[in-house]
Each structure stands twice: as structure tokens, then as C-alpha cells.
Image (cartoon, rainbow, N blue to C red; front, top):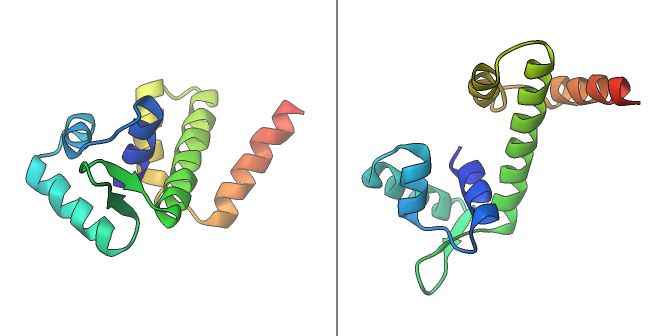
Amino acid sequence: MYLETILILSGRSSVVRAVDICEYMGYSKPSVSRALSNLKEGDYVKTDDRGFILLTESGREVAEKIYERHTVISSFLTSLGVGEKTAADDACKIEHHISDESFEAIKAYINRGKG
């Protein structure tokens, strides 16, 4: 969820700070700092000389994959009549656990309906 949050925030502003992540996610500064440290160790994020948070190439790939899953699943659920808030909350839960095969099948099903 942190990588997805950084991706979203970087689309809204040219810089992302730890405090921005705290505010967006509603998490404490120590929790965000700990998570960012783990993401740096995994080479998913880095900080520039001013301390702004940037996604690495691998971090951006993971974030974009998760974000795509979130938006597609959320949209799919709302098309079934699920309320937007519930669909977004459920998409957050599903996006991290759904297999690539199932996700691709949902995308194909949605695309058939558009064509």
C-alpha cells in the first residue's frame, strides 16, 4: 500500500514527503519511517538530497501493478452495484491477493463488455 500511495501522491505533487504519506494513509510517523526503511532496503524507494521520496524503477513497476489492480477491481465491483466506498475498500483487500490469472480474466471480461 505504501508504494501505491507514493505513486498516487507523486501524481498530485512534484514531491512526496514522509509527512504526506502519514496524512494520506492516516499512519503515525514512526510506522511510515519503519516502512520506508524496509522499502529502501528492498530497493523500492530512495530519497533525494532534499529528503523527498522517489520510487525506484522496480518500486514504480510494483506500484503501477497494484494501482491498476485497485482501479480495475474497484470499477468492476461498482459496475456490479457495490457502493464506491465499499468497492474501494474491498479492492484494497483483493488487489494484494488475487492471482495474475484471475486478474487478467476480470480485465478480459470488462474489456469484452466495452467492445
